[in-house]
Image (cartoon, rainbow over all chains, first blue to last red; front, top):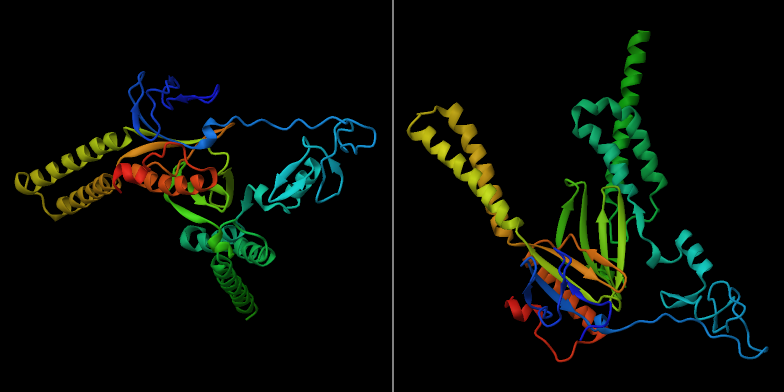
Length: 198
Length: 172
């Protein structure tokens, strides 16, 4: 039943579970440690996937791969148009790309499916605006944090937040509260100056 | 398709690193998305449905152990409260703090009891063996796996001969 290399094993003690004992989709006790596991297997478990090696050039008139001149070109990269062999072909989001274009696509954020990290600027701005107020001891820090929060909220208003849907309420609250904090500080400074002059 | 509908939330969420980060799972059109939110950043891991070979649970004794600890503390608190009320004749300055502490521990105990058994869940692909921290309660894990199973099998097909689904097996 099992293919070589695709074996069932206990996730507690790492001992291999014989296929006859580890029945898929049944709570199966490990013969070694006795811990019960629950397996859900899918057809991919039994498939042996082989990578494509790229076909060698047969005749001189065949177009060669840009990166492997000895390999036969199978298609053109959909970004840069260079001829690529099966080895260089990377299929992402339904497009066939060459490895350098994948790399540049990731860096420039053109390939959403390669995006694996996002900074949540709205949360940063919200915390900078609200936290010093919530912790009363830090209220004097608003002198510094309020302008930073306002700047971040405006600067990153259109910046992408998380991949999952996030509304802009944090940004709005950060702008409102930090504006009020700045107004408060301006009023306080004005009051102190005018009182000092009088 | 709007961004909101692009992903379907799966049951289960777990706070990690003392609540600093939290993990959740989402069903996408062609992949499973694991989101690790660290407060000010989000990290994403994608698992294509075609690549998923197996999902593995392992029952853990955490639920029983925590039940014993929380139950024990609650029992001791109740006992002290009862003794303070009947034998030691505490006034309200002794009874109120003790009653508050007892209520707190009892509440924790009941919440943990109701949340159900715990497990560890892993996802297996040809090159990875990844933990799924958000699925650490059996109840949530069963629901999430049933949804994942349906989606993965719609892409990969089912193993022959057809077997019972996780929902049928557990009657949920």
